[in-house]
Image (cartoon, rainbow, N blue to C red; front, side):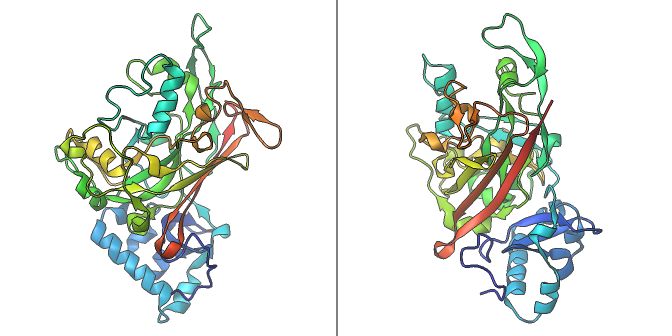
Length: 394
C-alpha cells in the first residue's frame, strides 16, 4: 500500500508504474514513472545516471532482470517511509510537465494482425472473392515502416501530399491526400535486441520486449491505394506514426493476458504460442472529443509473441528501441472498428457525429485521441494514457 493519496479508481497505481520521458521548465528531459496524477523523477531518487538521459534506451538495454529489479525498487520507494520526503520532493504533477517521445526508435515494423480489420478491408476492395488473402491465417503479415517519422503524442500531423488516382480518374494527379485516416494500434518496444541470424522464439518474447504503448499509424488511403501494388505500403504510411508517452511494462499486464481466438488453420511450429500472449486491452478512439469506437485487442488473431517470432524467423536482427505495432485493432461490431475507412465503410456510410458533422475521412483541424485500459490485479484497471494528434493543412 502506497502512502500517496491515490483515488481508488486510479489507472496509474502501484500495479502499473509505466515509464516515460518528461521535462520541466528550465530542466532537461529525463526518465520518470507515473504514479496517480504525478510523475516520479527517477534521476532524482535512483542513484543511476541512465535515468538522466533523454530517452529510455540505455535503461531498456539492460534486460529483463534489471527491469524487474528497478520496478521493485520504485515500488519500495512509494510504499516505504525511509525516503518518503525525498520521494515527495521528486514528484511532479502530470499537468505541469512536458512529455517527450520516450525512446529513440531504431526500426519500425507494422503488422496486420486483426482478422476483423483485414476482413473488412477485403470485403470493401475484393467484394467478389475471399476477404482474406490465402496466406493470412498462416503468418502475421506486416511491412517495414520509417522510424524517422515516429513522433510523440501531441505532435501535429501535416496532411501529406502525393500521387493519388481515384477509380473514376484516367490518370494520377499530385496533391494533398483526400482520404486521410487513422489506425488505432498497440505497439511493442524492444529492450534487448537479437543478433543477425538468431530468431526470437515465442517463448522468449518477455525477455526482449520492454513494454507496451499506444500507436496511431496515420494513413493516406488514396496514396496507399495507388502505390501499394506490388510492393505494399510506402508514402501513404511513412509521413507520421504517433506513439503514446507512457510505456507500460509487461510485468504490469499479467492480469491482462488471455488466449488468442481459436484457430481454424494449423500453425507452423515457430508460431505455436504456448505462452498465450494475447492481451485483453480495450481501446477508445475519440474524434474531436467524441467517442466513436472501442476496439478490443483480445480479438487479435496474432499475438505480439507470434509477431516478434515471425519478424525474426528469417534471421533479421533486432535492436534496443525497435518498435513493432499490431496493425489496426478492430472487433466484430460496427462500433469496434479502429479506422475511419471501416467506420464509414470506405466513405459510403459517413460517420455522423453528435454535433451534426459527418466524417468519412479526416479534415484539417480534426483531433484524434486514442486511449486504452487493461485488467489489473484485484479487479483494478491499468491505464495506458493516450496518443493524440491534430491534422494541419498540407
